[in-house]
Image (tube, rainbow, N blue to C red; front, top):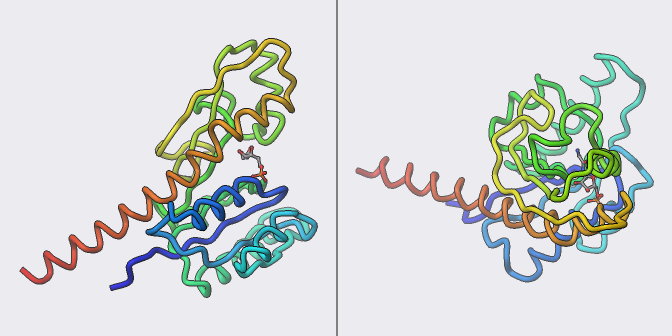
Length: 214
Ligand code: GAR
């Protein structure tokens, strides 16, 4: 029986969360995970360079056009890369496309996402990247943070795996707050959640194998 779970990481931008996963793997903190593929919808995403430097196969799947047919084609290509790579768990690490219900239903509790706020605050459709921190600051919250959760058909609506709170400071801008939330929360709980999800899959598999022998 395999002793790791294959992981694909979907990205769109700078890829600092991908880097946190790569660094955690290099530091021996992800013993249950094997990083199989990085997929970007943006050819210019710096995350692709990070994947190449780490020796992880990197792919670009641009989303061409709008509407259902474009979404179906995009998802079919992403799905094919995930399946061919042997990944069983997919991480959305700054992936700025919403996946359809049809796609996520194929992978129940096998897709995880990092969101830069404490869900259920500042989440759902339209809340992504810097916009989340702009909303938190304009609301005047004193504490924000990050959430890692399973992805289901509701944007930011799946079961929560880990959360970490971060203080908002006097004079914070969306940019300073974004950076602090990444450093203090996202880069810690994303690799930790990924390891937990993969370790749980392996434990369930070992348990099933033992029961089969009884
Ligand atoms: C991160 O803050 C991530 O939480 C956020 O985008 C940033 C990507 O940064 N994701 C979302 O807002 C998704 N709803 P990165 O490319 O440096 O990891």
